Length: 126
Image 1: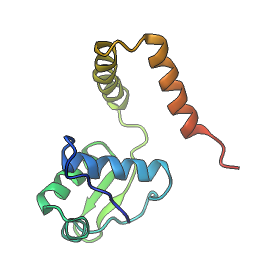
Image 2: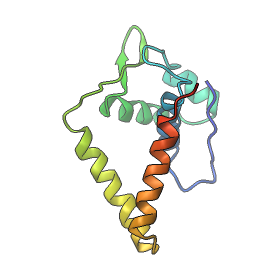
Image 3: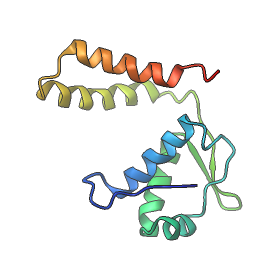
């Protein structure tokens, strides 16, 4: 598993790990049932603190993407119907849309960007 951490980024390191795992799932580089490296191994592999990896794994668990098991470790297990998923999506979008509007990005441009991103994910690979 390959992670690229940008130590100069303003984004928190644990969020970089979190986001790269989510993107790996979407791009099918990581699949449900896959075991992630232990917290210690992941931290050593990418050169960050174990607590940082632990925080990323805990967030993924809380979001329903990861099961932490004492025997198996961190295993990708996607809860595809958590009750709170839509509210979580809306809250994240509120923040992103507010930032866009503050930067004078129009609603039409926001809609176009959402459509473009959705189209990227929904393309038939064949």
